[in-house]
Length: 74
Image (tube, rainbow, N blue to C red; front, top):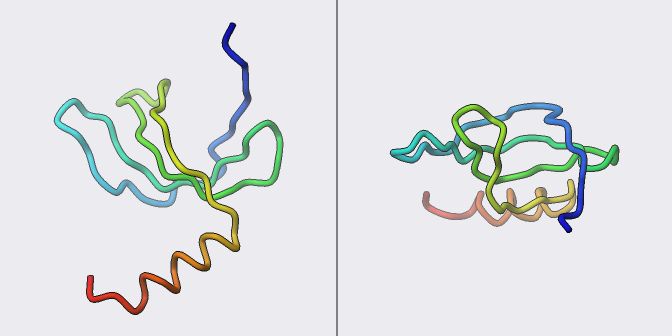
């Protein structure tokens, strides 16, 4: 039996890429199960009804990631 969960996309921040099948990898702020919104990176189907596996980051983790990327030559 699949575990049910609730989510709300609080803010769509950026589309990072799009696959040939129309799925988009996005950075969003998402509230999971009525909790405080966190930064989330994952793929979404073209109609937004399905999602792939992703990663969710707290504010602190996002801050560390931002600092780590600032010094890189990207």
